[in-house]
Length: 223
Image (cartoon, rainbow, N blue to C red; front, side, top):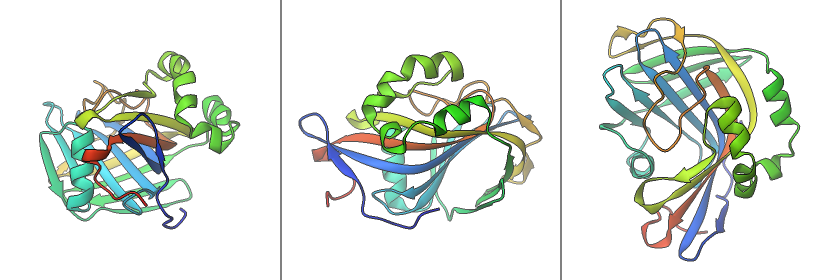
């Protein structure tokens, strides 16, 4: 993944700045009922980082973040019942990925991209990253993948998701708090961290996420 670069921050509506996060999101369901969403950000206003959102079978929602700063920002954008600041390590290569964020140890494998992935990679990257494009493709994303590409978030924020690639997750196994999570399963019921969810079929999606933040509440300096 690319190294750290200066954050890309643009201006949207009056009184707001736009923060850009470039990386990938993996959404994985398990036969235990636990659903996991991993966000791995190669470029962000906080530098490279990874966070994990996890919802248990009973609906308990947990955020695992690598620093108090990133935890505050993510928890201010989404909704959780519990927030933990823990080391989060990711190793990825050749279609395999390992995520270690105590008390979570998760491993998964991605397969070859299908028609939707090929379609997404055909869109020029700069275009796919634009919030206006996320709005334009929203009806198709809802119909084909069951996901929303833009919407209101916490603390008066607004988000846009610009997908650039999609690969299926074909295998997954993991342990959370000493409990085996079981085998790979659909992401259902949908996770309830924010306005949208990940696709029902486990997948890894390369994405640019843009968050409009009120200037009086922004968590990072404009540079």
